[in-house]
Amino acid sequence: MTLFSRAAIGNGHGGFTIGQTQIEPPGPDEILVRMQAAGICHTDYDSLRWGKPIVMGHEGAGIVEEVGDLVSHLEPGDRVALNWATPCLECFQCQRGNQHLCEVNSPVIAGGNGYTPGHARLESTTWKGSPIERSFNLGTLSEYALVKTSAAVKINAANLEFPAAAIIGCGVMTGYGSVVHAAKLQPHSSAVVLGCGGVGLNVIQGCKWQGASSIIAIDTNVNRLELARQFGATDCYQADPQDIGLLNAAIYVRSQTAGRGADYAFECTAVPALGAAPLAMIRNAGTAVQVSGIEQEITFDMNLFEWDKIYINPLYGQCRPQEDFPQIIRLFNEGKWLLNELVTRTYPLNDLQQAFEDMLAGHNAKGVIVFP
Image (cartoon, rainbow, N blue to C red; front, top):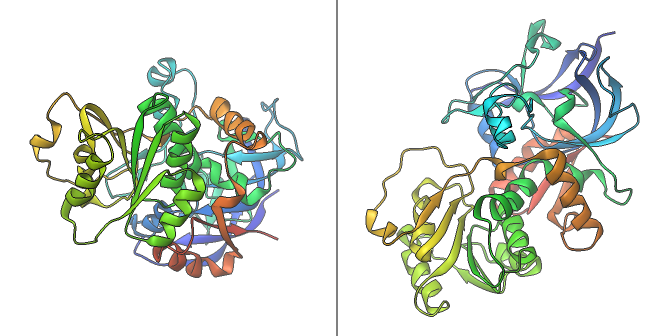
């Protein structure tokens, strides 16, 4: 039976409306999730300008309402966290362990023009009588979401509330994976984190958990630097917005790392002009990680690569959802990973515009939409 669902619909040209979609029953490998919470991040704001109508939202958690005929590991009533990288486990990339790069199911970011939707059933969700895409095949800013079963991970932690569970699906995973999988940060090393928003705070947590001896947080916002200390930064530097390429900040980093630079640096600002900045922070043979997904064309001073420096641009923290999500939840249960503390404020769906404004102003570590 067709279900009606209130949802945030981006118009593709910078605006959105709260409208009503129609959702078909799950296909054989799909589940219907009654959403309880949906995280807000800059990608959701960017999706307003993808040039087409879209059901917004790609971070979320909720309760399984209905399952398809081939779904055996989930059942109605299960609490699940959603992820936007849905591996098929059989394609070229999945067979090589790159589940986040699945060539069959996962959406592929496409330089400022939105994304290709993979193999989602576009006709399963309609708005005003026409099929409408769901952001990253999820569309979590909706009372209900129809997703592939591979997009859902069961939450085995009764004390993990839905707003905190929702943000695992992107910001937490990206930060965790960028440190653990992409950088493979070694114990007793030094790290610099540029930008202390939701993703940056999770990079800091990842560095702390991996045993970094020094974690320098850099941001222009003093409130975010205070949060950075709470999440594990050992040192904070308030950058000058006029510091081109953060070169003055790099001088400070070298002064704190025996004059040579840090072992690792993570760019989490999503500011194109700072795409090369982590290279200025690291020592020779150090590793710079471009975490935030900058896709614009930028210019690099090749002197910053001297010598033997590594620059990597991982997607989604090289996510393996069925392994990584449970690990993050285990760390939460053991008191080794802060999740509830990341949720600064919750909002009803009707206050989505305010949630965006607070995010852009830097008021929140993470804002989350909650559903009654």
